[in-house]
Amino acid sequence: MVKEVGRKLIAQNKKARHDYSIEDVFECGLVLTGTEVKSLRQGRASLIDGFAMVRDGELWLSGVHIPEYTQGTWTNHVPRRDRKLLVHKVELHKLVSKTKEGGLTLVPLSLYFKDGKAKIELAVARGKKSHDKRAALLERQAGREIEREISRRQSGKSEGR
Image (cartoon, rainbow, N blue to C red; front, side, top):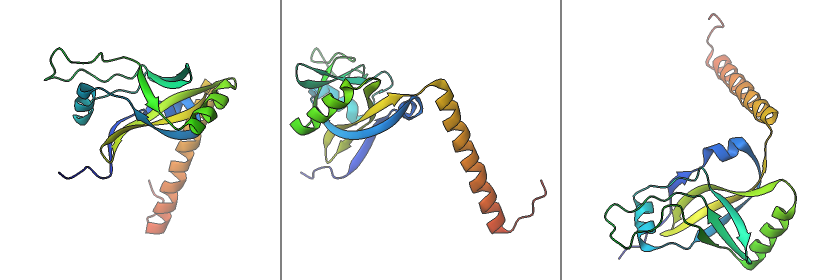
């Protein structure tokens, strides 16, 4: 039987990059049940309300919605249960020390299969204020306009609008 190779994206949390400034990114494994894996293979998951926390020396993922498997029976899982994350002890100590600082939180960025195993990309992030979000949006918009103008000048088009 041929193993899966490569990275297959399941879900992304695009809002996290808008709401938080990302300081560090970690890759974690997930402890899942059979029906959760089957549901993920169908590409169904939502990271929007998700967050991670350290409880009893272990890393846990909460608020991530993996819908029930449609062909599952009484063995189906609870969609929003807490799931254990698998990280190395050294990474766990780094995460604990960083989250002890004020204003830092653990936010999931993306959920994917890497070589057939479910992985989640976890970010140590600091929440942005609304004025920071506006400044980032204006900066991105200005960058787009600059790129547009450069490409227009390189193509030799006139400035007549």
